[in-house]
Length: 89
Length: 311
Image (cartoon, rainbow over all chains, first blue to last red; front, side, top):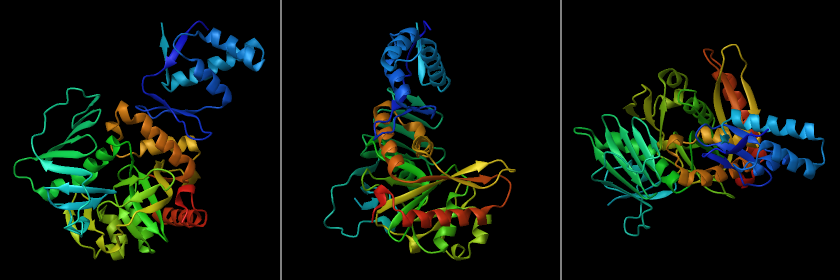
């Protein structure tokens, strides 16, 4: 949970209507974002650790810490698999 | 210099293009959107973001080589400078200028350009997209035999929201010999030789319309394994955006300066126009089944016009 991630260089986000989709322009991989996913994505700024993001969201959504951490890890794992985020030192 | 109208643009070209595209009014030309002029073509692009064997792409500049035919330097969304290889015919290079050249011009302008056969029926346009050889032109030809017109066969520029107009390209198609055998009315069309893939190049001038039409829907043809069934699925918006990227003509030439603009336009298109995927099992003759499904989808799209396809 101490890892830090940032959007990949070629990632784009749709800005049309209700639909929020991330896409890697070079790979063509895409992920649709729900409200929680969007909240996590907006916090992946290359500075905050996953633990800090989970703690922040726990306050916002009032959910148990274990559940929040698990959701953050699963979502970021999915983004990483699709090369939409990159780890930062 | 002769002016032509193609892909929604007025093109001034010193290399002869198909006569059907020529602007009829020779005295009052609109200012050309694009200049196509013979000249020096650089060997490399110093600011290239993408380099492959036959092309380089940089912001607002693409260098492309058609092996044994010629080279073109496409810049600023408004100019193509070309150089023919020794002994090559200008007519052979015209297809490259009207295909890749004009597609990249549109991309540099941040416009949507898809790889597909475009047809129109009762005032609406439909696109059939898919990888080379999957049967786009053949499906389009079967649909056209049942009535309707063609807007082009390979490259289609789709205008912006809210109209999403499909603009006409050159009036020709390429068909494999087995497809040609099954299409009686196509066997009589004027033939313009063979393309490098072995397909026959046919003039579709007699069923061509030069008028842009609002886009009613898109069919993406995709391969499936031999044992699988033919399926037709309406794509969810996220899948549709990915499919639009996948079927963008010369998508490998998209550079960082235009990527977000194109992505936003694909998003708008995906949310406004129905996009269907039809899977075609490899190794089995499912053409009749696919034609029947596609015809049903087109009829459905005409009954329920897309947001951008309101007549």
